[in-house]
Length: 293
Image (cartoon, rainbow, N blue to C red; front, side):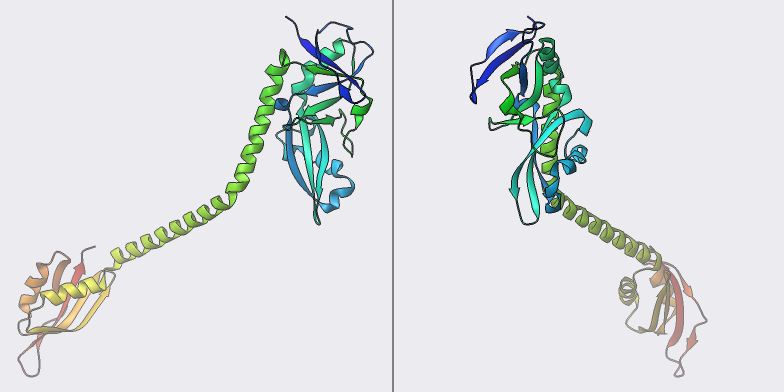
């Protein structure tokens, strides 16, 4: 079966029941019609504009179609209507119909000899919005002069060409709205991630520096545990992992063996000759050792 259109006559503002009519050349010759587009092939969204755009909102929208929809201005038919006027903004409803979605229906009607005056976009609530072929600065009101309304039934090319474009546009609009909702959370997460990366980098630098220079408190604890009761330190210094001990001991020679037995120290040795105190009872020593990283 070939393509079919449903033709309904409008009389006095009322629409008569539609009658299915095969597409035959000249079947609607001389008739002025409008092509009604199913809701599945229509993209509608709310748009906010600054109040300064009130004088020519249509012109502003014309230059922003590619930003507000997934299409370029030359790829769609569109219209708008005003929803609300606030103190600082205008809230508009933008209606968009992809040209590829209605091209088969327009071709069928023109083959039947009809003059297609405009489109009628079906909105989700069941209402109809006239959409002109050439956008103007005001919403179209051409429906009053239309005598016959032709509705192309999901036949052939409209289902194949129109619906994928419209569904894609609706999904993109839904994703855009969801992204706008999630954007503040994403910004906070990114800030936390940068903070954590900075903290990890800082802790890594501290760990690297401690590995290079050694841990003074740990070295002091180890040396204190190794020294016998008859020995004491007068000075301990640690620089770039090199430990220097100065102090007194009743027997300084045995300190080297004690320090060598600690796995945290390496190569302990006297850095200067051992001397005796004035009383002659204690050895004065200076010992050098390296900390194991």
